[in-house]
Amino acid sequence: MVIETARILRQTYAEILIVPLTVLKPASAETLAAGLATVDPTLRRFRLVASESTLRARILQRPETAGPHAWCHEHLEAGNVLMADAAFGEAVPTDGRDPEQVANSILARLATTRRAATVADRAFACRTHHLAYREVVERQFGAWVKEQQDGFFQSSWAAQPHEIVLFDGEPCGYVCVEDRPADVHLRELVLAPHYQGQGIGRESSGQPVSPRGLPSDRQHRQAPPVRMDCG
Image 1 (tube, rainbow, N blue to C red):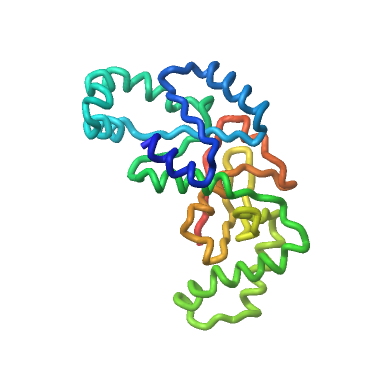
Image 2: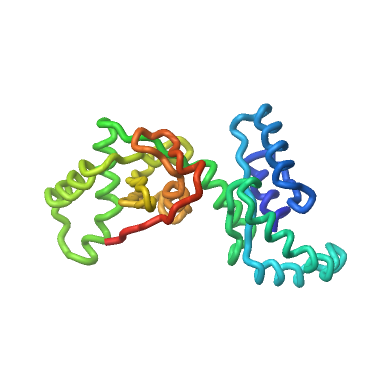
């Protein structure tokens, strides 16, 4: 999984470094990351994670020449502890995914960013709202009434600060996330139709951003529950 995922990633990013967790301690991982960051301040770290049942199944699927099954199973518990340690980077789930899907998830994280919305973004956001909602509204309620939808957008846009979602630097949607004491409330996430289904929404909703568009201090605290309202 790791080797094949890295091979796919190298088609886009040449500088991919694979570090086996079993030969590192968390402190060593931080030292390595700090050293690499002096060379490349944009360094991103990812750790591929999976459930124990998935890992056991993968071990049995490998030929013994790639690593004795008994030895791998003996070291599985220690590997699970390392895999759960955030010191090794951002968690990327691999259960039920092939290497290409895992690589695409990482690429989406690297390409997806957010910035605070400005007054100049209102027209773009309104167009995106209409593109994203029109098919659903017509399917469920019949006629699309532009004046009515303009009003729905305006009331939502004015209620809370929003951020613009960018993919490869291009605006592709908008999001509203409330950073509350007990939870992080995903109030609204809207993407233009041709950007949907690529993992952009999942990645953009997972980036804590303050109302001013600066990184939230929740990035440095234990992650709170994420609450999503769908209506």
